[in-house]
Length: 150
Image 1 (cartoon, helix red, strand yellow):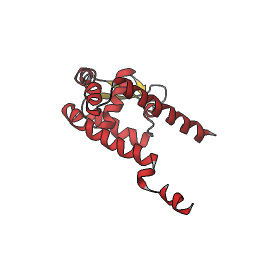
Image 2: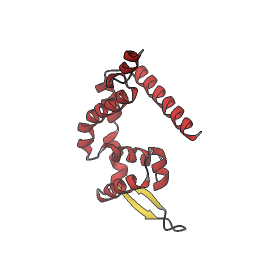
Image 3: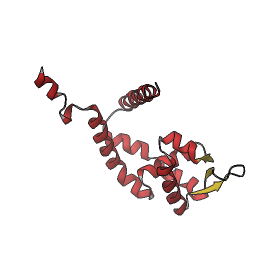
C-alpha cells in the first residue's frame, strides 16, 4: 500500500503537470506564428477577445481571460504602445477603462486568420480530436471553478 501511495506522487503521474507541460509545448508551437505578427501569447489572447467584442472594459477582458487587472493592465498598455488599441476612460466612472481597437489593431486580424489552422496542423490531431479535447478541457475548467465557489 505504501509503495502504491508513493507512485501517485511521481511527477509523471500528475494531471496538473501534464496540463502545465502541454501548455508550455503549445506556447512554443505558437511562438513563431506570433513572432511573425509581433505579439506575445497573452497579447494574442487579448486581441482575440477584442476582435470578438470591441470596446470592452478592462474588467470584462480580464473576466474572459481569467486575468486580474494587475496582470492585464500592463499587457494592454503594451498593446497601446504597439498602436493596436486605445485605452479610454469611461465618462461616467473615471476608474473604468474601455479598450477599443485602432485601425491597425483591426487590420491585424487578417494577418492572424491562418494561426488556428497552423497550430492544429502542428499538433497532428484531427479536427474532431482537437474539438473533443477542447470540450473536455472546458468541462474540467468549469467543474473546477464550480467546486471553488462552493
